[in-house]
Image (spheres, rainbow, N blue to C red):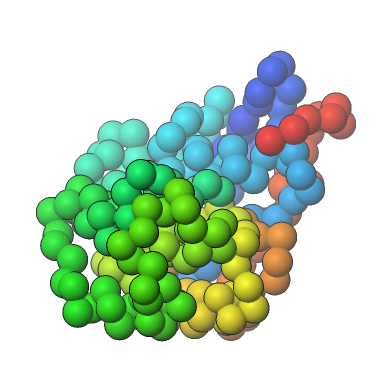
Length: 215
């Protein structure tokens, strides 16, 4: 249902990776590995349509994401390395803004339960710019608990999370996969996902230029 075909990408005259292909179906996860500067974040931007590959294509339901952007983006939740939060808004206002994009409303009682589970209860009315990096990351990841999107693409989702946050987040991901969702992610920390549903790609295997590059 989600597929990359012979992806090639270069930056600053240097080719970061080439010949990259994969297929991802319901209940499957793809772990993107690579050293700093290998192009992991660049690859996620290609896979989500933020940027375009120099060669190859990305397909959703057998169609190029460039030719049917609405169908693809209506099924996509992308959380990048940064939180994507407005620091002047509080947690509830940030989440409500994202929900309105999908024509959905936030249920206040549901939010309270989620904030309690994530250790955020009592902080929901504070502008997120005054919260710690770990608290901001938890708020960003709250979007996963509200999301009904089928494909989650996450860039370093464990950044700034403590051990309890990591464990909770892993259970959220596993539940998403058990319900038939799909996941593409990068992480410097190991995620405990059942091997049967996990694929991996090391960008070092697709490197065609030995020159030093940076993300």
